[in-house]
Image (cartoon, rainbow, N blue to C red; front, top):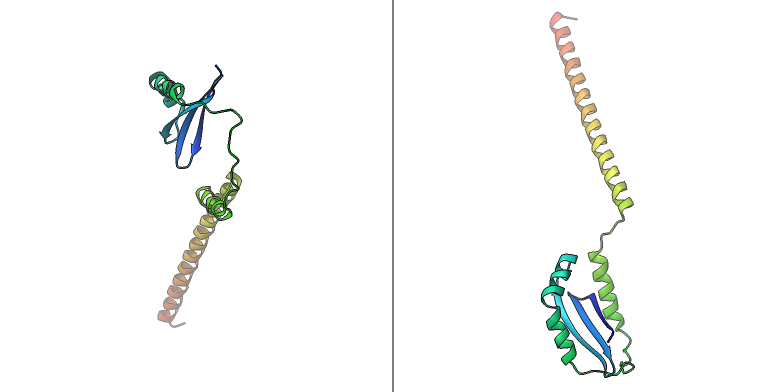
Amino acid sequence: MPSTFSVFFDDPFWVGVLEIADHGGVRAARHVFGSEPGNAELLDFVRRDFGRLLDTALAAPGTAVGGRPAQRPPNPKRLARRAAKEQAARPLSTAAEAALAKAHEESGNLNRAATKRRAAEAAQERREAARRQARQRRRGR
């Protein structure tokens, strides 16, 4: 009796499906995990709950292997919405682009610091020039 257990993302939950193929067809049962299960959570599930899932699958009615109904083509608007949602969830940049952006930001920070330093030096020079002129005026020159 060959069987397979598959874990996949069925929006918005992670689902595990147990399929058992025998002479009566294919029997199946599913378990909803919720968030993405890690290796430890899957191992814990196999230890505690896999027996119940197996019993549920064996109690399910068998279906013929080739009896899968043809799927309708997906709605293009739904596909566009799903693609836009996935694009929004995905980071906008690759690691290289993120590194370049960080380097650009750091160079901007350095340039701003240098500009402030030059402006402070220029202001200091103007103050010193004003003091020199004031001293010269006091001395009558």
